[in-house]
Amino acid sequence: MTDIRSNWHRRHKEGLTAGERAADTLRNGMGSWPFVGIFLAFMAAWAALNSYVLAANAWDPYPYILLNLFLSMLAGLQGAILLIAAKRQDAIASAMAQHDYETDVRAAAHIEMLMNINAEQLKLLQELRDMRGQVQAGTVGEQRP
Image 1: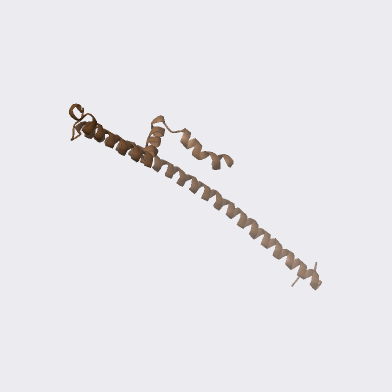
Image 2: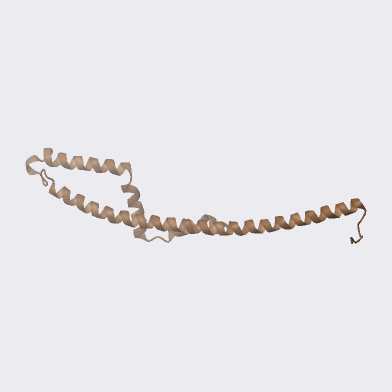
């Protein structure tokens, strides 16, 4: 029982391919404020370097066509990585839902068993009360008509 409760998620994570783990890591990195900050700093540095520092000898002058190409490729890769990661999240949600269902089924079986035990105990208590009532009335051992 402990094996099911504590290890199903770990077993699921151990079954991931290197690509799935990489997609999760990249998704977590790209979806963070540090990534946004570094990205904006890189864009500002690229623009400053090509517009002011290298001015006449810039490798990518003002409309920044090379930068635009890199950004387009990055957007294409990010889309694919995010789709892979979303697919993984769906698999995790499905595994969690299955685990919850199995837990609910086991809990329902335990509750049913406890309800049966409780019903049996109530029946025994009623029999004991009846026997006590017969003893107090002095009719123990006598058959009622």
